[in-house]
Length: 163
Image (tube, rainbow, N blue to C red; front, side, top):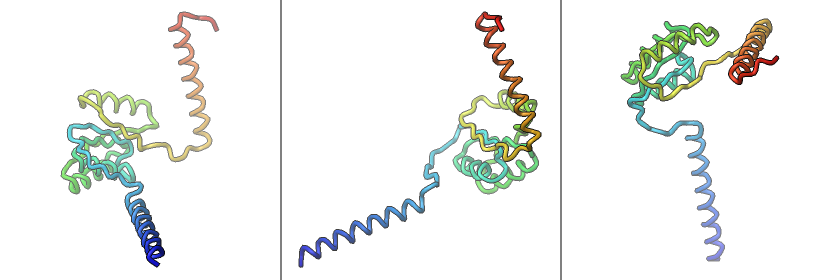
């Protein structure tokens, strides 16, 4: 009888531990548990005015990072920055960046290089959600042209001018 009692007790302990591990994993899975201080770090977040980008910016501001919201809609980014500043006491910077425009990308990069001494983290949150069929033609035409330019440049660097 004592052996049966020991086995039952052992099984219950194992089940309790398994349940505790399961509950812990459900509660913490998918959540960042780091509390690392980001003071002195500069972070750029593309698409930081909404959704995941906004919440990432909020968390990094809580950790005292210098956050730059790189967004197409600067007025929306400013509203987000105000909200984050109220919540965290740290106000993110807002800069215009339209990832569909190479001119905007170049201007943004120049502005960052001129204003910032360093960049520690780049979070590429923004992206193309969908693209129309006629736009695919433009994208593929642009990519083909860039590939040809790259091929010519590589050939010129190698000293070979054969076609």
